Image 1 (tube, rainbow, N blue to C red):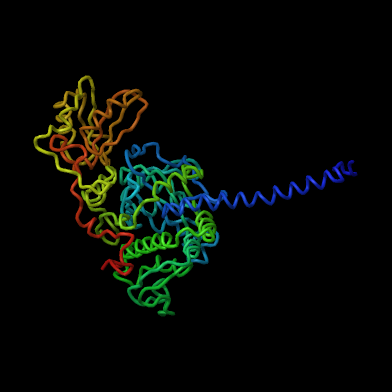
Image 2: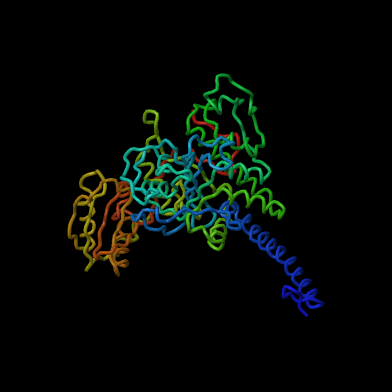
Length: 504
């Protein structure tokens, strides 16, 4: 029997209604179980929780802004660029977001997760670092020209949009390091504040009393004390204030602030691990993280995020290191120190730790003099190569050409590249020529591979060629000499929260 509106009435209706209610009652339970199980796995991955996408909360930025001239992918390990944005959009303005309507980059960290899944290193790049910003895409689809000797954080503001330009920052980091970023994550003030509250606060150490004027130097009076000297637990706005303070502590520099930010991240990782697996805290933490994040398209699926999180589940706090790119002051700006920086990138590219060890913890063994050199087995018979010097150091193309000829390669040319600002050595190859390109790369430790649409093999020498071991003196896997102060200044995630907090 049916009613006036064509709806079934009677007992059949009641049965279906009851069944529907049961299904609706079970659906939230199923969803809740999926969420809980997923996040149990994620928290087992330590810092992997940062990347989980919850119910479509995460915003992605377009891949159309990424450069067409990117480094070759990593042979081992994964690289993730983490950008802190001080945009004032949304709820950020009340937390101290930047002035105006343009998104700005407040901090940047290049995280390398080693292939063994037990080691990681985070390299901070000061916002005032002088770098070359490669062409970047504007909102109208046009591309900018290369900017020379520009401040690093200005890359994020290219296009002057409220959401910033993470693709431009990624292009800049890839150009600077010669490392391909597997993923990029942007998190704003609001998201940071929410996450610290979701974990119940983070333990930090303040080296001295801090007042309102230390956070806002334009104040005419010292203001109230916002931090007392010593160890304390902070969350929300207080946690944000801690990582943003620059004046009144140490030398008042951004470098000093970076040290405290590294200490804070270390403490946050310790807190997440110490909480264990508590389902009641999983959803708030995930919700806080995902609501205020912008990520690359590669992190747009739960499957990929889960895979990335699982790759980090066994990382030990002591094996998680934080360093700052080798630097020196250049006036009021920060200049990169070479060849130290290129040595750091070469170690990361080779999946070596910052003290020159294989990621598994075993020191790379020196070659036995009685053992034939690995390069002696490289035969270039039938392979032609064009050699280009991509640096400002004269004579490199001729030197590399001699090495190639020694191993039977045919060198069809040795000249300067169109530009002399190449950070890394790259072997270009045409369709079907990857195997030949790999043979060339065996002679040049740390070289990357790059496909091209035209036929032929090319070798473009970058600055890493200057610091790499001679191919006729050691095996391709021999470690570079680590920059001692890079390793000496590193912070482990399990260090004392009061140690090494300020520069100066």
